[in-house]
Image 1 (cartoon, rainbow, N blue to C red):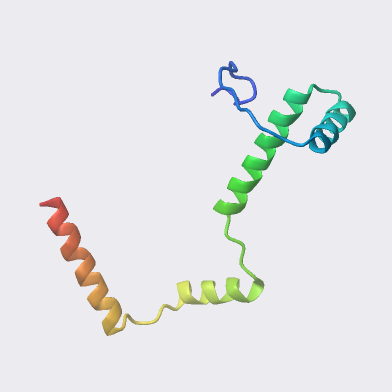
Image 2 (cartoon, rainbow, N blue to C red):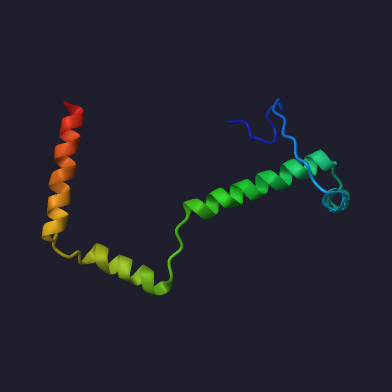
Length: 98
């Protein structure tokens, strides 16, 4: 699979920013030794990957982790509401499959 940064670049994004923002970003690009466009693309891609990763990973506290493990190892019996919800779910999906 081709890396997004190595694939042929055909898409374009435009953004409006203040003179101060542009100067700041140009300075950062200069410090990294790359063009303004390359710096913006790298930074945006890094931020996007981080945001997606943060969204996809659930972080639990030690207490929550322990409660989750205990619930998996020793689950409680289903109460009447849960059994009714399961019956309703199965009935709805049978109707869809028919």
